[in-house]
Length: 397
Picture 1 (cartoon, rainbow, N blue to C red):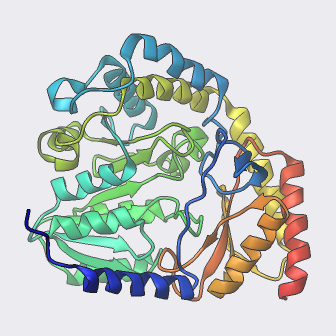
Picture 2: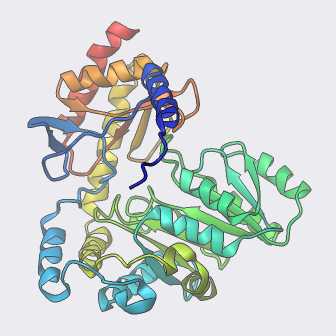
Picture 3: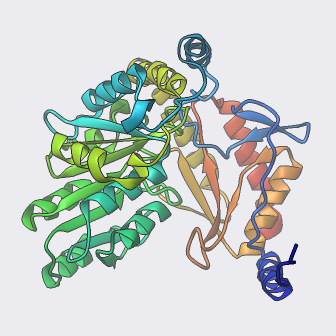
């Protein structure tokens, strides 16, 4: 058998790039968690108080959600077997989509469509609805999947300064295109602030544009659980709403809710939907149980709001900047990459897990600790975190 040509030069190039990433403090490392998700996790056999997940309502290991998944296995097995358009679309998927559409209700008569991830959902929205000769206006701090979807759509991409409605207005006034799309996170995943959705919807109406809203971090938390649209009291046929189901909902996947014509367009032409195996029906059954908790268990959001207020009060005395956020995402700006990593490591030495977020996930010079709070935390947990940060802050001030 003839041997393949040597590829040592290409491997050496990759190794140099990886070494540079490590030397710059930007290398990422996967931690192997050997416990269920919760406010305390076990990593390498060590119990840690964790402020690192997006399980905002504490549903990832909720007994009723887990029981629903166990019961569903007996009826539905563990796999969907095919894409939704072949034989993978089971009754639990259809029922969940109906429930989500009615709950979020971005417009009268909305439909919903479930996806295996938020990344696939956003790629589907932008590549199915936008194309050449169209223009997409995107907030500079949007999640990577919105940026990737915009680029894959082949539409012109105009990025405006974060949250700057005036800059967006000017960009829309000077741009031309067959169709226009304003695309934004609802709650920004690294800053925790909320997009000015009422102003963005007014612009969409003024310029005959679509408003695409990624509510990954608002669904289940804001608007009595119905998300950021409900938080502002917004409904419109112009809105294309995406919510994820692996954060506050505690399970996995995502959904798009919009006018029936939008959803049917995604069913027909969105390649990430058409050509992906459906998520297991058991997950849809578990998500139905999680949705019941989101609708009915207001105590989870009340507790979460109390913990957010307690953390912000305790963090106000720290030597770092706490960004304004009324959401479970509480960013402490450290600035320097190595210092942010050192603070995170110092917390870890005390048994507390808070990730350091570094460029390119956030802009250069804004490396930070991203504190994620959950209704499953206690006030004592939050007090332990702020006390530890206070001790560590004295050595870095």
